[in-house]
Length: 304
Ligand SMILES: Cc1cc2nc3c(=O)[nH]c(=O)nc-3n(C[C@H](O)[C@H](O)[C@H](O)COP(=O)(O)O)c2cc1C
Image (tube, rainbow, N blue to C red):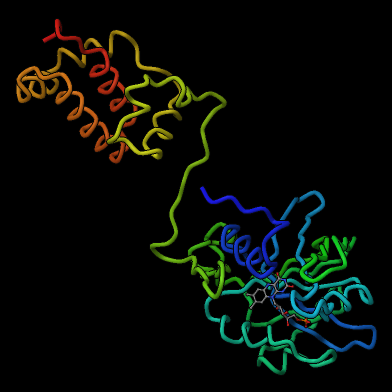
């Protein structure tokens, strides 16, 4: 593994390393105003949600890496501690990118980028009409992490009103991820589009028990056929197969067929058992796969 000490590499290299590794990042399209009421709109991918009680979002209009300038968004929230964070979808990316141009202070990026400002209800900055989710926020705190180039300015926001376009809701009134078509920021100029085949589901672990990968025999853990994901699914089972289940599997016609096919060669039988188990895991037959693996694991020459 390459070791990188942040203190010893040029800051542009450090920036690239961290932003490539910590990705994809959601994008806060932040709408703010200055003390005179002039609007500003800029994207920030150093952004996330951190709590719901109170509902807390944090984003960072950082000091510029080259000239150490403060961003207009930061200056605005110091003057008027309110912001609307608009969620960015794929249909908005080109205009969003245009809005990230470092226009002089006071220039209204709503007009520059062609987005439509809509009055908010609880805060003064405008919402972006084209965004399907608009979060009106009050700024609770701003934490400056340093005063040098690239230092973060954490804007800690409390959401006070959420607007959701009904087009992205499911039948129960909840946001349907499949309808949102969100984008995320990666390293360099890469983005990711969260839609269609790039979406997948992963159920939360059920109950409060899981046997854990450490309960699997070494031969299973060290398998050159099973993947880390396979081991994760096996380790998520709620209980180990019983001795009776394993014995029954060893006496089954399927297991006998594998033994005969490989002429009693234990290494080959085990190899095939791992291949079959892998298919079973793919078919969601996790418990049965573990029975087969434990049956193969218990094979001794005398069993054949
Ligand atoms: C997708 C995207 C994400 C960005 N994320 C950040 C970020 O997290 N922090 C930051 O300081 N600048 C970020 N930028 C750059 C700012 O948008 C840019 O500096 C902008 O001009 C700041 O505008 P302002 O001075 O009007 O606040 C990002 C740009 C893009 C296109």
